[in-house]
Image (cartoon, rainbow, N blue to C red; front, side):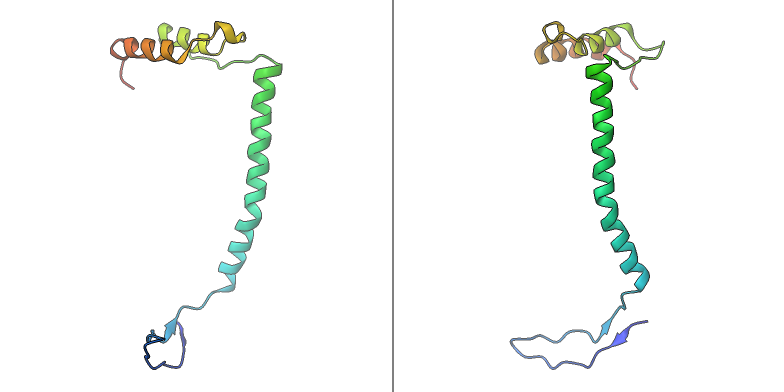
Amino acid sequence: MGLRRPPRTASPARPARSGWAAPAPAALQRARAAYALCIPRTLWLTARRRAQVIHQVAILKRRLEFPDDAPRSLRALAERCMAIDPGQRSTFDQVKRELAQLRGALPAF
């Protein structure tokens, strides 16, 4: 169901368009307004979660926990990458080289 507009005559400056247009329901307008209000809230929650992760890692020195069945070699690589002392962390080239070696040894996921 749409609204009827009076037909226009075509001219070089203004081409003719269809006379039918879908109405904008009030529910759609309310949904758009609610969505616009959700964006700042989402940004706030994301920043808060990021701050919580930073606090857990930097202040409390927490690290990811690995399942018992995780491959030892992959677990050792991840633990080296998460070392508290930056000097003990693997470089990108070391990680790349080790992942290339592990590619054939690990089962496909």
